Image (tube, rainbow, N blue to C red):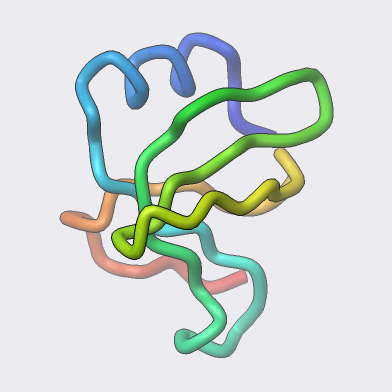
Length: 69
C-alpha cells in the first residue's frame, strides 16, 4: 500500500504516475494524484477525467520500468 508521504510528494511535484492493476499493460491508469483517503486515491487522467482507485494497487512514476504484479 502506498504511504501518505509518497502520495503527498507525488501530488506536490505533479509526478505522472502509472497505476498497475494487473498483468495486462493496457489496463494501467496513467495520471496525476489529486486526492486520497484511507482506502482510495483519486487520479486525474490526461483526458481530465478522474478515477477513484484502491490504495492496494502499485503506484509508480511513468519514468521507471513497469513492475509486474
